[in-house]
Image (cartoon, rainbow over all chains, first blue to last red; front, side, top):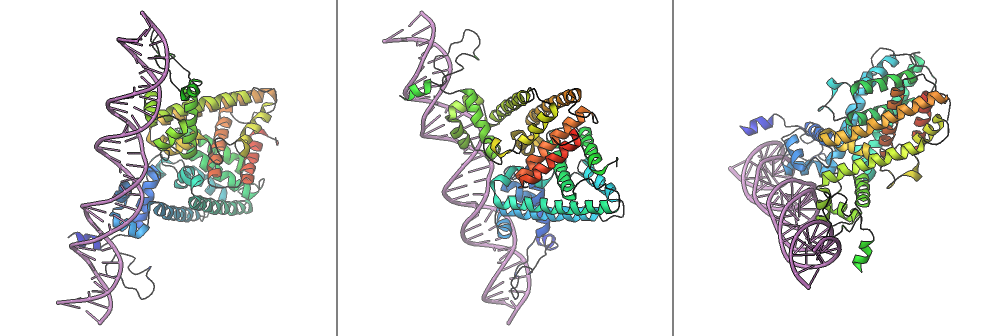
Length: 220
Length: 220
DNA sequence: ACCATTTTGGACTGTTCAGTCCGTAACTAC
DNA sequence: GTAGTTACGGACTGAACAGTCCAAAATGGT
């Protein structure tokens, strides 16, 4: 009975095998789904505070499956960071592909970061990249690289987006797009910290409003 | 010989005793100094990653002395946060008591946060309050309260300071002082995160320049 | 059916964790 | 000196930690 249930989630089969390799027994879990659960666990409690027990429970794996598939707690975090970054970038690109003025999309995007309804996996957990950057980036080179890679991708995309906004006339071209992009990055990062520190949402909203007014001109 | 050395640092004596209480054997360490060392340890590595072994080594105390004096690791952190907050507020008040235009002092104060020479206890460790806010505030009410208390004190002082700047003519009064104060808080918090994430100093400096231009008018 | 191979559950490892406890040292009052 | 009290060093605790290992189960190829 248990095997019937588990069999439904079999995936990946021989995907990562070197050509002719077969897969005598199929993996009983979905790697991406397990990684999402690991990601949520790290997101909720941070790296150090998430024990292997927490992680295995969240992912629904036994120790042997976890170590076979992910190698170590730290490597699982690196994989989770990578997946998070891809998810966030895809979602961001999707958002900005709508056919509205870029300034409007930008304001929506920034305000989304303090929308309590949009908080996943739970309230008050902020942004995984920010959390991990603060906890681990100064002490682990590979993690710092992962964080910086995400920040660079996001900054580059935002700069590009702001240029589009300059072109469509919705964003005044008073600042270098790269500077404005960094400002937005900084705005979001700061907001995550202040939110964790218990600063009230209306104050965070006011910070966003003033900042957007500085960067985009009139109110949006 | 050992006692001679230790005796030099004897302090606090009967300070916290209830009136007629005597202190048969004096404490051999300075509580404030020990707390500063604990503060540095938490600042460098975060809460979870700092073991009692690290803490005792940093503070130069044995286990019994530590627990007798501070109660627990968590209480030591709360005491360290309180001390950090007092130190920072005192230093900030001192800085802004100089007889220069407030806008100039403000620009200096903000830029100080990315001055590598001013990094204590070490490079890349940012701000203790920010670090702890991200790591623990969402999971510990008392720590959240300590973080919020510091942020509120700082925001109130900055708002007051900006009003002084409006009065002395160095800061245009385009924004609510409270809003500008929150913007500055957010600026500093964001910078700490981006710095941890490996964003280059010249980009952080540019973020600060643009933000100050928005809030203070011309370049400072 | 049987073999070769992979995944799985969970027992097991040695280490490190925060925190307790107690015998001894240090000190004041008398 | 002696009594009474506090501080200290370090041995000790039980729990939790990340990670290893292996027998049993599952599967495809033959």
